[in-house]
Amino acid sequence: MRLKLKGGMLMAQTTFIVRRAKDSDIYEVMNINLETLPENYWYGFYKHLLDNWGEAFLVAEVEGKLVGYSMSRVEEQGDPALLGLVSEIGVEESIFKRVITTLKNIKNLRPVGHLVSIAVRAPYRRMGIGSKLLEETIRVLREVYNVDSIYLEVRVSNEPAIRLYEKFGFKKARIIKGYYSDGEDAYIMVKRLK
Ligand SMILES: CC(C)(COP(=O)(O)OP(=O)(O)OC[C@H]1O[C@@H](n2cnc3c(N)ncnc32)[C@H](O)[C@@H]1OP(=O)(O)O)[C@@H](O)C(=O)NCCC(=O)NCCS
Image (cartoon, rainbow, N blue to C red; front, side):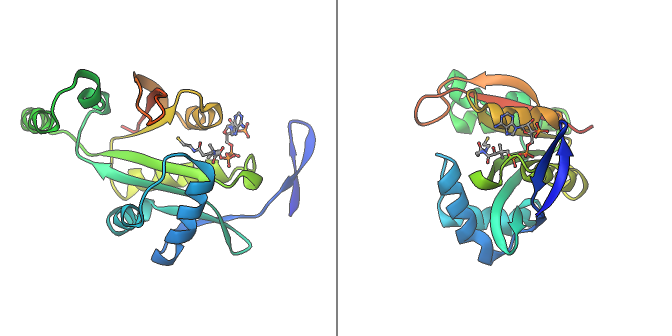
């Protein structure tokens, strides 16, 4: 533990590292997810993300203990502004996919990064860990996966996360009504990289 000056006050600063996740981290990542978010996933979902977009699956570690994670995937939809059309106007997914394919043929659409989930265990928040996870996620999606933009969904009430995303240049692009299983709306936030 070190001390740093923030807003004129001396704050405890925890030393942490951010690294690429391994298969053996998945169960602990699942525990963090269960502790911190109502959106939970089965083991195979994590494994799929790790197997396919492993460079963008990151964990934060303090003294050998996992305290946070960030996981993403790369999608082919092209313009993130199109996302959410399915739920919003009730278009069947197959039709939506055909529209996207047609658009791709018209204009060479680029892949987009999708930040699926990011979380930090409560006692380790406000120490810069979420920022480091997000900064590294953006770097990897840009440099390794060559995406033009990154999007994510966030509960409209999740002020800490929205502030974090805004700090890194994400902008609220649209609202999806009733996106979450409890009926809460989501903002789609987008960061354009190119
Ligand atoms: C969102 C979350 C990942 C942020 O992690 P963190 O390690 O606390 O983030 P940081 O310490 O790097 O904070 C970065 C910025 O986020 C914003 N922020 C973080 N927590 C905040 C809070 N409680 N209130 C207001 N702003 C907050 C601030 O702008 C902060 O910058 P600052 O400390 O210079 O003011 C964390 O709060 C969390 O895990 N929440 C639960 C899971 C979740 O909601 N995930 C997002 C799902 S979309």
